[in-house]
Image: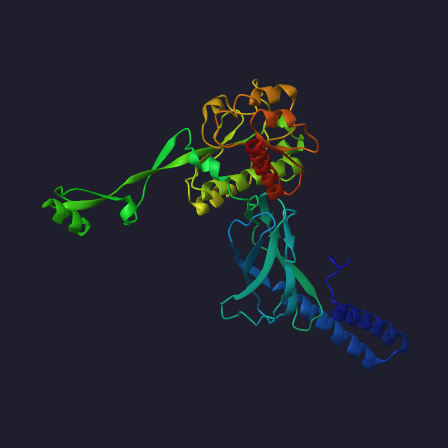
Length: 414
C-alpha cells in the first residue's frame, strides 16, 4: 500500500483528523472545530500543490569506478541528479534500481532542497558500492527519488534519467607460476616487439645516417670505431602460447547459450580461461585465445602486459556457448603443430574427444587440459602427455591449476 499511498505517516494523521473534525463539527455544531478542519484540508491541498511543482531536471549521470568491475569485485557508483522545485521540499529517500547481476544497497536519505525559483536547479549527489554478482552487461537504474512537501505531509516519487549499462567482467584468479621447464621452449610463432628502454642488454650501435637525432649518438661506440654511431634498439621476441576455450554447446548446459551467468560450469570455464591468459601473459608469453573450431576470441594479448590481459578479460563479459560445428573438435586442427604452451578448457568429454586430443600433447612444451565437469575420467589423457585436472563447476580454479602442474611433475619424476 505504501507504493501508491501518497500521504506520509504525518499526512495520514492530518487527513484522518480533518475528516473526523468535519464530521464532529457538523453533528455537534461547533464552528471552531469546522474552522480547524478547513485549515487542515487547506494545508493538505497546499502540500499537494507544492509537490506538483517539483520535477526532475536534466539527466542522471553515473560515474562507476572501476568502469568494468569483475565478478566478486567492488565498484563505487556516484550518481548526480537534478531537481527543480518552486517551493522548498523536505528530506526524502532515493533508490537506484539494481539488476540481478549487481548486488549492494543502493538506497538512502536524500537531503532537503530549497526553492529554485531563481532558475538554478538543485543537484542531488549520492554514492554507494556494488559488487559484481554475475558476468555480463547489466542495466543500472533508473534512479527513483521520493520527495516530500515542506510540511512532510505528502510524498511524490520521481523516476529520473535512464538506466546505465554496466559491464561485469569474469574474475581473474591468481594462478601459480609455470614450471621452469615450460619456459625453455618458445612458441610455434615468434611475435617481435621493440624494446624502448636504453639498457646495455637491448641496445646495439649502427653507423650514423642523415636524419638521425643527435641525442641518439652512442659516444662510446663512436670513439671506439672513430666514426659516428647511433643507438638502435635491438628487437626481441616473446614466445607464443595458446589457450583454447571450447564453447561447443554439446559440452555445456543449454543455458550457457541462452544468457551469461546461467550455467555454472560454463562460467567456471570462462573464469579459468581469463585466469590462465593472465598467468601466461605475466610469464612473458604472447597469448592467442581461440575457440575449439579455430575462431579467434580476442586479439592476441602481448606478453608482459598485465593491463592488456585485464582488458581482454572484459571482452569476455558477453561470451556464450555456441552450437556445435560439423567436426565437433575439442581443439583446432592447427593445435597439433603448436610447440609452445597449450591450455585447453572444455566440458564433458566423449571417448572420441579423448582420441582427438591424443596427438596434440607431444608437440607442446606445456600441454594442460582443464575439464569442467562433475565427473570425468582422465587417466588416459595423463598417459598421453597432458597435465590434466577435473574442475568442478564453481570450484577452486587455483587449486585445480596446481593439481595440473603437479601431475606434470609426477610424470617427469617417473
